[in-house]
Length: 141
Image (cartoon, rainbow, N blue to C red; front, side, top):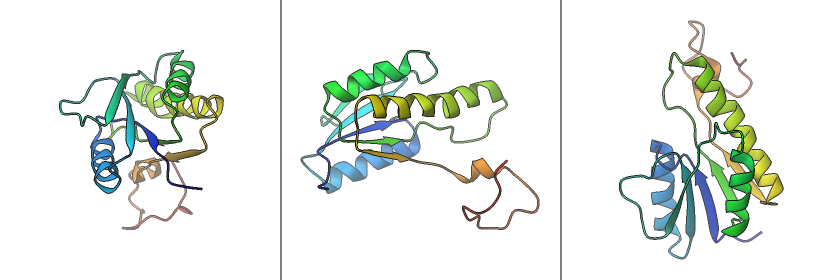
């Protein structure tokens, strides 16, 4: 499979989303990025087409699917996750679980061939018995 020409990135305004887009554009000058986030980032490269999406909205999946089809997206990187723990457990669930389901459903509906989902060690929770480095075999929360 050849390298995609159009990649969508959710969480465009997050640290990971911004850095990923910078590196992708630096490596592939002909690549086009479709950025999805709640707020438009302050600085945006001309090769990035921004779409305002709230992953917690009930209609987010079909709205994303429409964008993916219209923009002819070949791959999606899902990076719309919290950067640090919060006390709003309900919103965390909406963004990270329901939002991820919306992205996956949209990719399926739009027949996107590649989906990359970023993650972090926050899934494992802060436990006193955690080793310094966690493997994927370590139990989740």
